[in-house]
Length: 432
Ligand SMILES: Cc1cc2nc3c(=O)[nH]c(=O)nc-3n(C[C@H](O)[C@H](O)[C@H](O)COP(=O)(O)OP(=O)(O)OC[C@H]3O[C@@H](n4cnc5c(N)ncnc54)[C@H](O)[C@@H]3O)c2cc1C
Image (cartoon, rainbow, N blue to C red; front, side):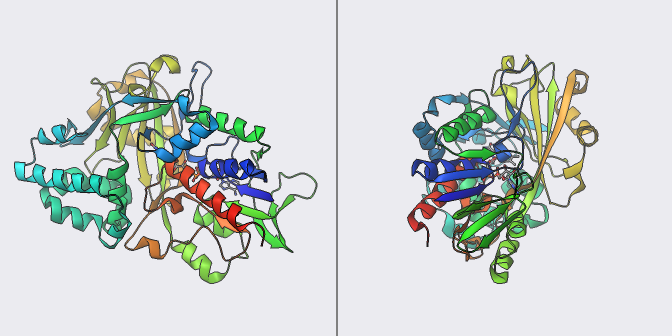
């Protein structure tokens, strides 16, 4: 079969691998200059590794990714690191990544700690969590951990991330976050972009054609086949396929395929997403003085959610001996900060960053900003009832995206899993 895939993120790449392994003729259309989607990276002339535009790491529980890379012969590229995760509470940093560190937290009573520990252990041990979607995260955590522990540990993270939707996020989302988390973190040698390039090489060897800088503008059925339109396609501006897989967010999916039935489109449009904006700082000295990799900001007055010093996970030697720090935030899709320049964003963040690292600004050598409007699905109560399946009402058209990894939270591992799942559906169904 001739199969067109829209999007060269990890979902599209993973699907392309399985489809090409089965001997299908696969073409990927990607609007960006590089493959990788949200896991894309950039580099500089004096760096020998890529840096992800948005902070990334893997967990040891990310089995779909590890298995896939093993099949591609790329599993040796992932190296495990032990990194320090801390939380900023009341202006102080506290390590909060193990039961022992929880016990040391001074502002919680022993009873609070016991309740928090029991609830987290329950989620860790629970094998499946989708049934939890009938409960609200906030309500459940307040009730089980106690309102003080909830307020100190989780409220600002929930509200900072989900804003007005925080009270509607379902408990399956929280379960998935706790379940997947591991202390050891994996990171590909050379950065995620290097890994993506290695995957793209494997695909090309399998005969997959990857068309970069080629945005699809329309996908429509004509006769028994599917047409993908892009002004970057030579001669006719379109290409014909037997099946098409779209891996973009729901909004883009809806815009690309005008033939989607109205009732189905309404379902797609009900799915909500947050955008993400990441400020990247390059410094000639470390930002944190204690080797912290990840700092959660548990204070809702701060304009960002996390500060991540990448070079406390990966040696700065790979980046021209500079320290690299991400300042991350999730925002509603219409928020003006998603289109701010790096200097504008830094101006807003500066007084807060100085509270953690008072003289960092005098060591700043460069800064960049990366924004994505489609970064984090918002999963409300009983989300599975509104989530459309990967098969669509139009035969030969499939949709697999960040949304389809539910009840897991968005993640590179789950993108690979979703990509392989939809490839299997396409293979099993064949041409109708
Ligand atoms: C801030 C942030 C931090 C993250 N941290 C982690 C982490 O630590 N660990 C982890 O595992 N995951 C992390 N993730 C999530 C991970 O990056 C994603 O889950 C994964 O990359 C999603 O892959 P995807 O292919 O499903 O979607 P995407 O990566 O969004 O891919 C979709 C692709 O479609 C392309 N496209 C869109 N429209 C068109 C069009 N019209 N024509 C052609 N192409 C088009 C896009 O350019 C993109 O390349 C993070 C994400 C963000 C935003």
